[in-house]
Every structure is written in structure tokens, then in C-alpha cells.
Length: 367
Image 1 (cartoon, rainbow, N blue to C red):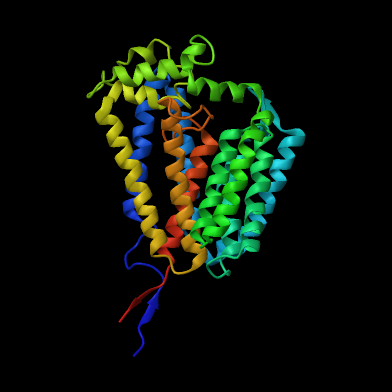
Image 2 (image 1 turned 45 degrees about the horizontal axis):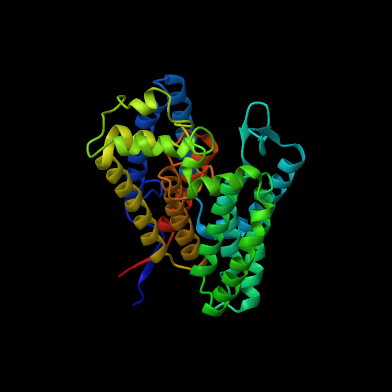
């Protein structure tokens, strides 16, 4: 007799993976604790961030109920809607801090570019899901266009950090779908050739960030100030840290943007090496759980999408920690679920909702 398929694990509540959900709740709790210190103990900031998390978990629960086959059907429409929003931002978007990245609806302000961190891999996975590996060069070229158009639209806002993250998650999809070494070599060569040329198309402040990475002391009170102060804060934390709410660099306002992009410096100073290791272990566990879900997915679309979303989460925290530690240029990438921010938190939790949908709706065979 043939085994009978079932759609989800017996006893699984609301299609939620309790292991992954528990890790996300722990990470959000850590984020609120560090944010309370970074925001000078302002409860209004904690309340707003808690509301962001609440909305994010509601979106997560909603997406977890949608079968991956339905997400597959929605992928091209969501991608086109995302492109339309990016074009709208360039036309009538709200400008803040010298960048036109937001849409302001009066009661709500959000960054459409954040949504493309999900819509781009969904669309690329949709296109490549029925292509046999190894992928011919023509299919790789179309996938690169799918990824490249929104990346370009985001980069001219300008938002180089988000553009690079969207590019990375798109590359992960192409790689996981089974591209050939020849295709990788061709596009890798094109990127290497374009790098020197791209320097002349960077804004002045972007060029300064790269120069500052090479020599932060060249302008210690200007462009190098962020990196110098954050490195002092992280180094002064030692092994055990100075204690929660006791960081001198953070509490005395030496660290700029300490509740957003540079919140890792606050964590390093107050919780030290041990706190940093705990955070990295939590991040690593979440990534490994996501890759485990990708490995057990039942179809190419689900497997490639789950793998790319998991790897993109890895890139998010590596890039942030790298730039705060002075190992990478400052590109304005928040520390996922730790930094203050609404659109970013909701988008990240939405991605994990998709992962849980893929995990819970796969068919299991039992005798």
C-alpha cells in the first residue's frame, strides 16, 4: 500500500515552527533590552518598537498559513507591485537625510525598498523553478535582469546598502537554482570590470565612506568619527562588558546613530565579548534552522526561496557588524531585529513567515 501524504506535522499549531519562533522571540527580546539602553531609557521608543514587532509577528502568522504554491502564483504580481512602488518613490517619495526612500501616506511612512528583499527572491525563484540545472547562460541573464532592475532603482534613491542586500539575495537564488561555473565566471568578470568604473558614479559621501574604511584617522572628527567611537565602545566592553545601562560611550552620546545602525557598539560595550558571542550564536542558530527548512522543502521554488531568505539574513547581520567593527564600509544596514526600525523589522519577520509556510505545508509521508 502507498504511503499517505499529510500536509503538516501532527499537533503543529498555526503552522508555526516552535523552534524558529522561539529563537526569533529571544532575539526580539534582546533587541528591546539593548534598544532601551541605546535610546536613553525612553519608553516611547520601546513601545513603538514593540508595536513594530507585534505587526511583524501578525504578518508572520498570516504568511505561515499561506501554502507555498499560492506564494508561487503571487510572486510575479508582488514583484511588479514592488517595482511600481519604487518608481513612485522616485517621483513623489518623501526625502529625509538627503535620500528619497520613503512613501508618506500621512498615517504611515514606509520604505518600499525593504519589500524588495522578499519580492525579488520570490520572483527570481518563480522564474528559475522550472529550469533544469545546470542553468544555461540565457536563463541566468534573465534572472540577473530580474534582480538588477530593482537593485538599480534602489541605488539611485540613493540607498546603496539596501541595493546591495537585494543584489545579494538575488545572487543567492541564482546560485541555489544551479548555475554553471561558466556563468558565474562570466558575471563575476563583468562585476570586476565594472568596479573601477562604478567609483565615478558613487556620491561623494559614499566615496568618503570607502576612504574612511581604509584610514578612519584621516578625518577623526568628521567621516571617521562613527567608526572610531564604535570601535572604542566595542573594545572597552572587554570580556564581560560594563553592564546593562552602564556603557560610557553610549550613555554619554559619543556613539552616533546608536539606536539604529550602530546599536551593535552599544551591545558590545555593555555586554562585552560574551554578549556578542551570545548574539552571534542566536543569529547562527536561526540561519541554520532556515537552511534546514530549505533542505527539506518539497519543490525547487520552495527550496531556493527558503535558502536565499536564510542566507540573506546571514548577510544582514554580517554586514552590520562588519561596518560597526570597521571591517566594511558604512552602508546604513540595520542590525536585524536589534536596531530600531519598523519596515525592516516587519520585512524580516515576514520572510520568516514564508519560511514557516514552506516548513509546515510540505507533504510528509507516513505509512
